[in-house]
Image (cartoon, rainbow, N blue to C red; front, top):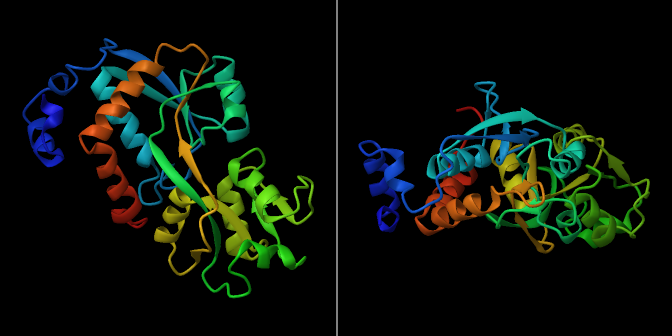
Length: 265
């Protein structure tokens, strides 16, 4: 019943009503602990706030809200992207979040939640870039270099949609993290980093004089949380995501992190 109320009214009521009043229609996990893996290198989804030194972001806020709605206690552990899917597949963590694109090959190893964001792929370049504005123009000049994190959606799009389909193409410089690829772009070591619009907007908003997004979107992708196969957490988390979509919470998080957030806050 309460979820049918406008978001701002629910926020006011949240000050005077217990969380359980909002979660009455959702599964109750009775305070169960959920251990979540996160890399903290993907603004605005999850990153370390330079002003506070604390991990923050869209996904942290979303998971906090999910935990309240299903009565769970979450703890976080830092984990690199390349270890994340294998670790979840092996059951070493209950769940992971990292702006993870829902893909069939990954779904063979882990289970996904329902999508919580749909994003499109764009070219992230330095703010003064004027040598190319389309993938074809980038591909035509052998001197242009792209930065990418291996095993990610931007890496495969760079290989197969921007360049020649050769995963060992020397024009692709590999980095351990997405953030390292962006720093290489900033330094002029590479000329292009592909990113989904979600992450790209975060970098541009925080550094408008350093980066910009160019070109037309190259397809779309859905993000989801990942779980070990057969996890009994999937249904409760999906129920919470659905309720957050229905009552405007996901939309409010988009506004907070994609439009209102400034890195120096």
